[in-house]
Image (cartoon, rainbow, N blue to C red):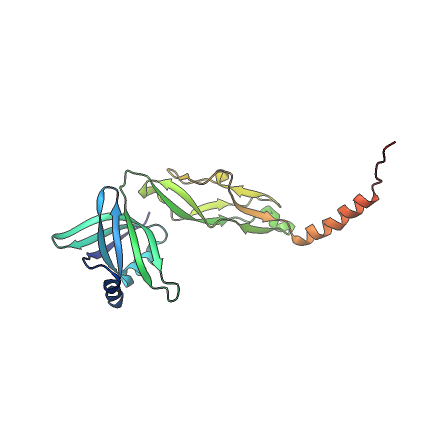
Length: 210
């Protein structure tokens, strides 16, 4: 699990005007909240945030050093939501959820497919039907990526959630029967098979009733 320390400021102003002023100064409005604490409105330096996230990878834990009027407090959180403006990719708003190291949390982890399926040598094509997996675990056990071995997949075979090996302390929240990847049969083989089946059907005499 990767951890990121960020210095942030508590903000008192709200509304679109205040948000525009923050963005003009290179800051993004955000909020820190949790079931055991009152929400705290904060602002984050966009450059520092992006640099930290790029270095940390997926699902980092944030130690937010919140500068308040009475001093600075550190709160541990997970990035719950990131709103981005589609036109220019600028940050609109960030949501941070407070986490506790002894309580399980739900996160989405990227999947990485490993190995060459045996069906590839038969002309098959590996098609991934999922890029990530929803899991539950303690904050310290959040994996950066989940490896899915596809080397045993033959033509028409799939690997499902229930068949993959998860890291210790991590459990999947999706149904065990959900397919993550499939080796598709080559289209040429499917097209060639159809005329043969039709010819065989035509050559088989129809049964008539006596």
